[in-house]
Image (cartoon, rainbow, N blue to C red):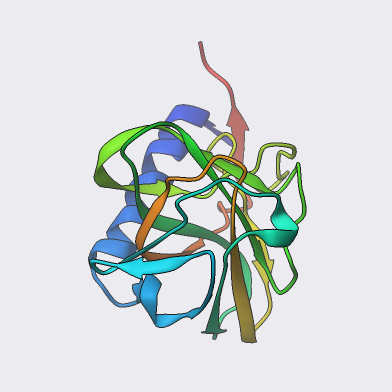
Length: 175
């Protein structure tokens, strides 16, 4: 078996995910979903001005179709200009707290970020903290809810399939 540094794999997969998004083949505009208040659409992005609990938060639902089975990450173009904020994100079911909460750092500019979950590490994650959704071919729904820390502005997102590493590779951590 060949050994590959975890750092090399992480770098390659981040590049792959953002390259897939940059090609624009799978980008979905945030305002294209079914948007429920207190989420609102302003200047081409979706946001919620006040923090709430999940039950009373804004809701955005997006229908997607997957043609190949596998692990997928969600890459979101997001901004949180005033302070760190949060969203709850899941696929095919309502997100629940506190484990399905995505903490978004402060950022004035819209930045591409991979969705992470607070409370769980996926065994198939290639980037620390990222949430990998294992999807089958067919129709799925991405569900986003406003978080307890409002202020995130969602511009667009994409779904990126993570290729499985070849069977003859072994992942090792290097200092």
